[in-house]
Amino acid sequence: MSNEKELIGKIQQALREFDIPAWLFYGFRDLDPIATRILQFGPHQLATRRWFYFIPAESEPKRLVHRLESSLLDHLPGSKEVYLKWEQLQEKVRALLEGVSTVAMQFSENNAIPHVSKVDAGTIDLVRSCGPKVVSSGDLIQRFEAVWSPTQVQQHRATALALTAIVKAAFVQAAAEISSQGESNELRIQRFILDRFEREGLLTDHSPIVAVNENSANPHYQPSQAEYSTIHRDDFLLIDLWAKSKQEDSVHADITWTAFMGERVPEKITKIFQVVRQARDRGVDFLHARFEEKNLPQGWEVDDIVRENIRQAGYEKFFVHRTGHNLGQEIHGNGVHFDNLETHDTRLVIPGIGCTIEPGIYLEGEFGVRSEINVFFAQPGPEVTTPPQEEIWRIGDN
Image 1 (cartoon, helix red, strand yellow):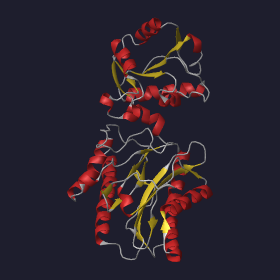
Image 2: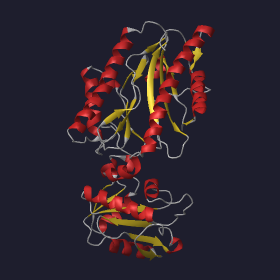
Image 3: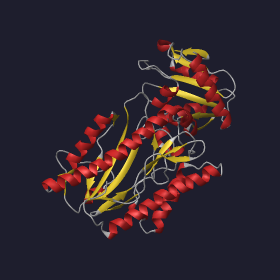
Image 4: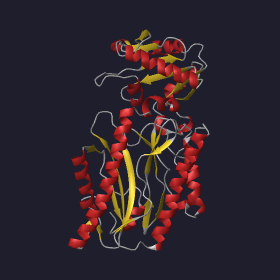
């Protein structure tokens, strides 16, 4: 149990840093995978009855489990209470929380950050009825779910470089097919990318986005066997690809590049790309400045800075998604997102996590431009881990 005791020590240290008296974990079936990961549940631990694990900032943790699964939390330190009847559960939860002013839970006020809202409203009601104020564990979660290990950082950097090489190769492949056959198509280029993933030892949870012309104006467009488009000379092409290493516990990289299947990129496409690129780079500059000031920003602030650049250029209504998302073992991780559009993300951008910056402008019926990079937040400051696209790829580029 030495590893578990070390984990509890780290959690208590984080509680003290955030000045939160306690973190209350709650589970029922698969309701909260964040809790079971942080608390190091085994892959086959059965949890069909409600359980609570209370970690105070200073004293010994407490376990509350059902009689049928009384050993459920035995891998964790602390005292143990067992209940059988629902009335006993409520009585023991009240005793567990006696004298506690505030507890963190996987909860978000008004569901502002749905990624961390794992505890049902009725359980929140129960806890509040016992006296404590309930606050979000969002920033605590980051410490234990989103911070990368040195090995994960190395794996991510390697994956980021591999994805950059693959997307360039995909453009070359499309150009070669157009030259030799008169056309390519979205499905063939998608298959080309997936074959390269296999050769490079990369995993993805979904096929990459390959979108030509007006299809690129749909941020989540996906070609299918039933519906896809051909790619011809002088077409515009967007590719969004993400993957992680097949090595254990690896984390994702995620990039978006654009290309023109001709020699002269149209002026309108070039103009839109430059607006998007400048907004992307403004986000990086902002993050560098705040890290240098030792004033960590919240996720929504990054979104505002990037979105303002696009607003000033007159394209605000065409930027229809958040600026970026957290990267983890899942493509959309449980750390902070750069978002003040879809959600108001107040979590801090802390050292040790990775995120995307991916502004886009989407002109329905014409084309859409997105430029996506990845940023790892080392202790000294932000590191852009994916070579950023500085101009639109075109036929003849390497």
